[in-house]
Image 1 (cartoon, helix red, strand yellow):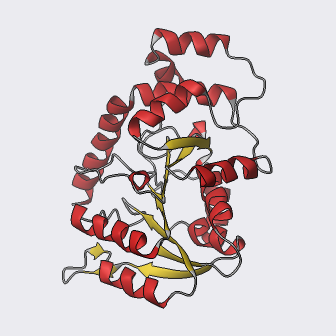
Image 2 (cartoon, rainbow, N blue to C red; image 1 turned 135 degrees about the vertical axis):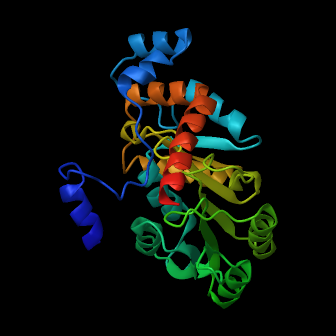
Length: 280
């Protein structure tokens, strides 16, 4: 918490920021330039009234192409963590979560009454981080009243992404226990290989957004994708007590980003490759 508070004080006043977790942000001028004609018409005609709680229908249609068989709920990314845990947990429920991680990844679960066990990263002989799925299985076996496995891949802060076979084991561990898999996929699309989304699993919940892999954190647009209709309905109910709905202009920016997703991911991966080369 102290680190987060210090970042809030100094993030926009320091000369050089070396702790950013996102790629270089897109400018508003750039976003307007890559809008197609239909999106630009929506932008120009957009009322600044309230918007639909689920999200703009055109944006939801784009999202449902990315998550076949799942439905989506638009939210702000951090709001998604808060509401997902609130919808999934009752006091005393067990959660096994990847660690280290973003502070709210743990504290929002605890605020909802969850008892969190950390699935902590290990190191190879050369010091490279990885997550041992055997450790996850042991943590799940030891957790009382397990309800949620919470996994963040590609992982922040290590950048680790499990091989596809390991990811399938994670899904199988959840399926065999009948628990939800809540996956923070905010970095999905960065790196050479993209894992199947957690939303492909019957009790999977995928958190996505524009903040990291698409370079638009200021839009504050994210989403939860799931096949679990009851879960999404509960999130929509809970949202009446948080933001109610999202910014009208931001949702049109979100639509523009999703319609230009490939180009934005290519841009972001260029920054990642340059940063990796500099670090090496």
